[in-house]
Amino acid sequence: MNIHVPIVVVERAELSASQHELLEQAIGALGHAHAPYSRFRVAAAVRLADGQIVTGTNQENASYPIGICAERVALSAVNSIAPGARVLEMAVTYRPSNGTGHAPLAPCGMCRQALVEQHVRQNAALGLVLAAESGPVWLVESASDLLPLAFTPSDLD
Image (cartoon, rainbow, N blue to C red; front, side):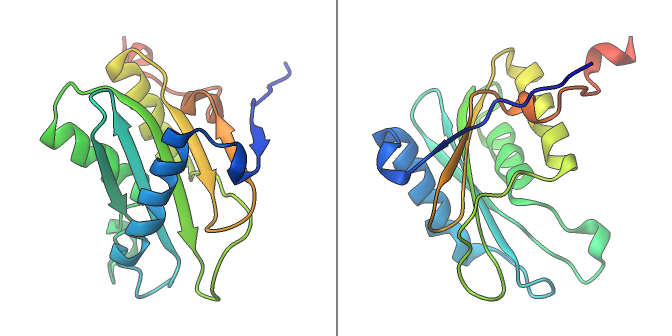
């Protein structure tokens, strides 16, 4: 079996106005991250079908296992304040402890699973815009592509 993850690498100037705005919202939220232990700040911004943008940031805790990633904070916020809303796209960015990152990073495994669950929940794919504060951008048409052998609710039947 061959598994292919379709990622398109673009320069910022090639982003649509909507993607650029979403990424800028994520970058703007980096200052809200609570990362006193790793000093690795992550922010996510999601655009809902009605155009609303909701952000989330990583929230660390002295008891490391109970921290939560920015992607899951954003999805939880959406599903709490706008139950049933469709997430069209999510931008994710980060700021490492040594300054500014220059290369995109993909969500962790737990966040990939949460993104698959959102896809199933809304019965529609959601795209990803992955970038550091500068440098190239990775575009992923469907976040579910990052977890090709995902465990889904249908596996529970």
